[in-house]
Image 1 (cartoon, rainbow, N blue to C red):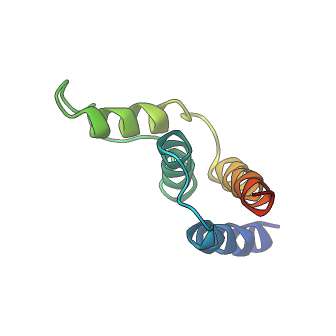
Image 2 (cartoon, rainbow, N blue to C red):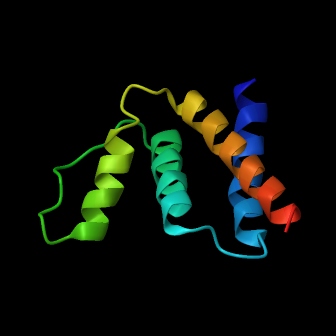
Length: 91
């Protein structure tokens, strides 16, 4: 199943770039965190400083997914992209 999951994950990462409008910042943050968890695994490195608002938000979103397997994160990413595609089609 992992090969099929990986293929669907890669397709979802392409599909998200073909939406008629870019996702909002909250959705982008979720996509980023899920993508990093799916491709790298648990969050690494130290938390960015207080003045790096974007870096800190990205780090925190990724850190919140700690413990999820890469396959779980891939499926969550695929499901979220499908939600975005459905919302985009309904516009």
